[in-house]
Image 1 (tube, one colour):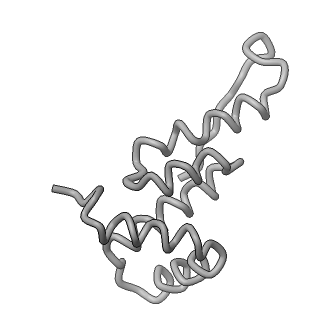
Image 2 (cartoon, rainbow, N blue to C red):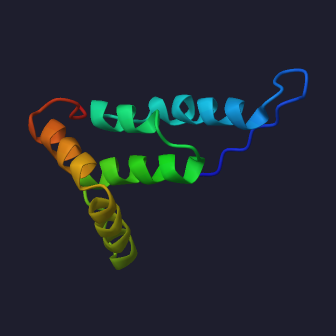
Length: 98
């Protein structure tokens, strides 16, 4: 998912600042865990935010396929603490879908 936002000069003198603050709110509603919600406030682009949501989704229910498994593996290696926090939240029974 690529999010593009057009900001007029009247709306903001620094469009990149407005875009960066927009990204967490774009994905925050889809995050199931507090760990990912916290991490979303640190990302600076939509692709990184989508990676966090994918990792969380993978930890909840693995998606079949080699490409998805490789992507999840790379994200876990790059973010071992976040992956552990996500797993801990999901296995504790919190944030499980009803």
